[in-house]
Image (cartoon, rainbow, N blue to C red):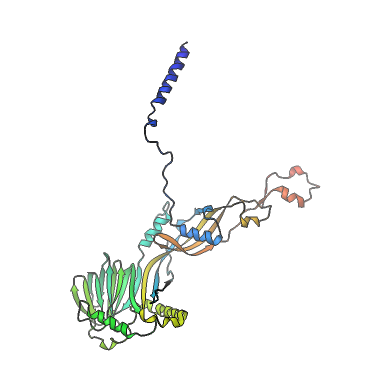
Length: 395
């Protein structure tokens, strides 16, 4: 009797607990934890491998990337764009070779490749860009320029530097150097020179009437060294127009050069632009004559970081895989395979863009086969079958 009462009491308590369970009156709790989406850093590299190997993208994933073996190096990239009167653009991308490869510094155990790569890429700057006047250096944003002159003279906090003819400036540690210029694609055009001189007269400084100053824009803070082109140790006339604008001019005005074709100021781009002009003229042929007079030229020099590393990918092997269909029947067919690739890539907008991807030759460790596949070609007249091992033969 006592046992029946206890069972009834327990049943009553359990029913009341179910009736007054607070979980039925509050917002249901999410059973799974939030997982951030996978990083897009290696997406372009994996996509390039998938396309070249004709693999399905959903079948592959990164298996191993040894950070301690990653190498990186800084280089300069050149982007040259010709804009013709027929509204067609011709863009050329050039780059220098990496002169020195480096390793990640410090203790990188447990560090993320994406974090380390973006960190070193953010510090990349353009090495040294030499320019010959006349030109105008303009720094964009919050950047500033420091100027060093002969005879240990220096100025800091500059936003604009006006460089006259026969003066060379060397810009260092800028993030980007860009300019926009009218080009004749090898044919001198008098009206282009007239427009430049007229633009020069309309500027704030009426004494700059020798030649028009071509604006060159700099991104990021940079250091500038100025000297005379023909005689580096010769004096340069300095005129401080304001606290952040300075004018550098020679002792004489080269008025006889006013009617000459203005040379491209950036020395490292001259030969590249001349070569591209010849290629473009040979490609367009007769059509270039009607569009050359109004052609525009955009040129940029950017700092870029290149990475060289080995990447191991793991791939699921499907039943209809073409590669494994050609294998001999006695071979053991795996479910997954691991393939190594040697990758050369650069960072663009915080993503790795592959430049060269090379597949490393796989090394086959072992091949296994069941004994039953081999016994058809062997004679066991003098050997008892009980001695044959039941496991597969490994070769």
